[in-house]
Length: 430
Image 1 (spheres, rainbow, N blue to C red):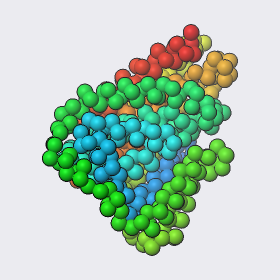
Image 2: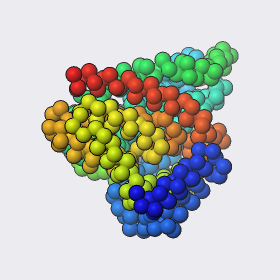
Image 3: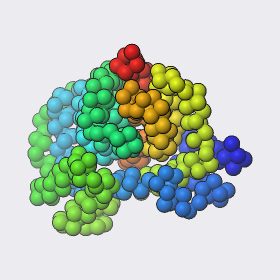
Image 4: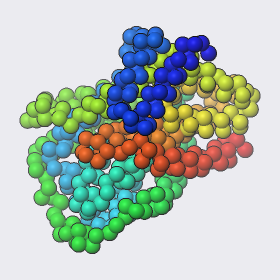
């Protein structure tokens, strides 16, 4: 690699170390790293802001912005209080049962929506129900972020990397259901059991608070029924458009922005109220991260790493599958899995063709999808949903540190990827 490539690696690692150690705010670290990348010409304005391969992924940014506006309007209706009371009553106030209910809802919704949208919707409910039951909210938020990444792996629209993979590999919505969804169900069953062990200290049952919850009427929490029905109608249209993406050909970001605009225009909500819940620091953090990773792509760092993996496994489909699965998981833990998949997918396409096209070689696409989706759980910056949850927690006065998230996420990532290994081997390679 060139001297510039090594320098860009040093800048990225320095910024990542600052994010991990929290010596300075993560937004400052990401923006500072992005600025230095531009200063040393590891990237430029064209590559950073306009390139689909190496620039800010505006589809992700505007998807987040649109859904944050919709969630901000929904919050004014009282529907999150309604859901919080409903969930607590269903769980009869028991902490572990409540976590199981929330993570199953999160994973299921993430399979139909993208996982970022799901955590935006479920996080406000979590804060309210944990407050009602005097439970620590951080374990529940972390569990939901992890569940959203696992559940999102099941479908084409569940996780942004899957959309990229489907486009490059010519894969359909049904392909993901057939090849990914069965294993995701198994992984969720294992994850629910893991939650009992990982978060056991959070499961402190308070019978008095549980009894108080059982006496509440969730319907009384609805503050504005007209606005609720308007909001749910728009959200339903947005969800339908997400699912029908292969038919309508509207990007999720376009759908989210159109939905947000329609909701603000058609209701009495003011612009100021609509944007009050937008997590601006989270959006800016993503922009900085995209620019830094794009610089690594521009200087050939990620491409070089990928080529070395390809060369090491040339002609051996089984070895290539295992290396791709675990390397994708490891790299997606370090850099956001969206730019990683965008960089790796052309190389996987070449490997698939070299292995006989979309016959036996198709397993490589599933290895890439599982590795990127599940590996994103390993660290606080590995997946978009993780970053969003951490941003929401900080905004509500319960910050989640990089290492608090990672000590749980890393275990879940290793366990789930380890379970996928025999699945891919037995189903596709034997």
